[in-house]
Image (cartoon, rainbow, N blue to C red; front, side):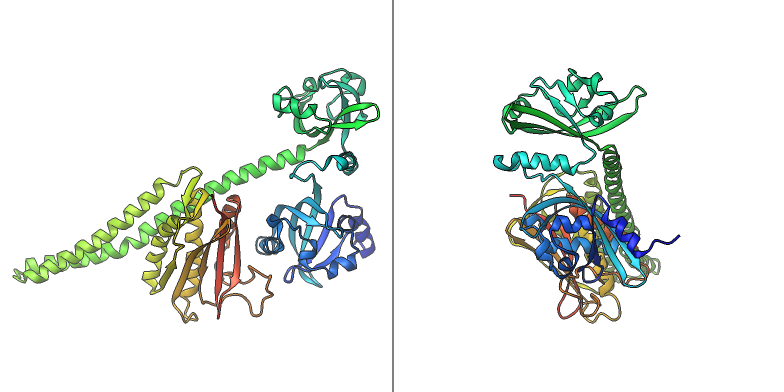
Length: 491
């Protein structure tokens, strides 16, 4: 049986999540389901005509350029997940968790399916005048939520059947019980800070509860402990919902983050091993040749002291170069297990350029670096950021050494713009595809290498995102590509 278009629309419109379908190349909206239209307060036809800035929050952390860049990562990697803030027709912001997937369609070509669910805005509680309305909205939003009424000592006075079931009991079983008898909480409800918050008329505390049934199986609940003012006085309401799946996802995500750390450091070690194997070969071979010539002259009884001295001098220079390479690698590897700290981005760039120049000199490429005159302090792991810089530089060099690239020059500069710092790496290679839209950031950037896996760029993207930054790809003039790595400045 094949679903008809009408049946598919019915399924999509009954989803609890909003769906947006974007054209992969232009990022314009092609279609939206009913939940998405309700969230934005636009019809499908109106959404199709919207520009990105009409849907993007005015919050600088969620500007449209970042949204378009993020959609492009989905085109490159196939899928991605993010917390994002949209804006509806009335100019009101709403926070969502979005999951996007690249889908190949026969008729339209590749599209991006964005699925989003509404989140509680992390910016804080609404204004008191809107607080009760906001609380009711949350209760309506989470249709699978259980509700418990608590007294000021956090004992259960009443509960919905669903709430009792989430704790593994009937309603009568949990009455008059302290909530901590039913589950372990991640927040100490006796802490002075928490007690002070719950003494406020509009006080609110977010908690997470771990429930174990009699078989030892665990269930995780997310709870909102809120005070509500009504005619009868102050009510304390605990709204709970099952987030066991979310917690499992968080555990998997934590594992993936740890694996990313391992892969990043493993790649760093591999890069250093390749440098030792490749770049040490040249000075050692040259030194061997010079010393071989000296040995031959001595065996022949030559009295050409100048020639012998020249050979020894040149061999010494080559061995010193080999020693410098080993010292640089040792310094780099010694810091691979470094922890997060404040460091000067210019220094990290300088260390990374050393390894990039080893490759560039071999291929006859000139590297022109222009560093910001003052220190650019950022918070993070300098080795991982250095690995990103090396990776971006190596990709640029791969493009520059192609026979089709006329200018054998790679340009790198660092700059500061307000609370942000950037590293820009430019080449004049093949660059992006012809006539890309202005907001099509990563299409074609380094993607035409037939043997390229893209893993290095994906890992680099994750590293930079974990440091609170982002990577964008822009057309260079008159040709080629500029890669911009942006990180938050540590004041």
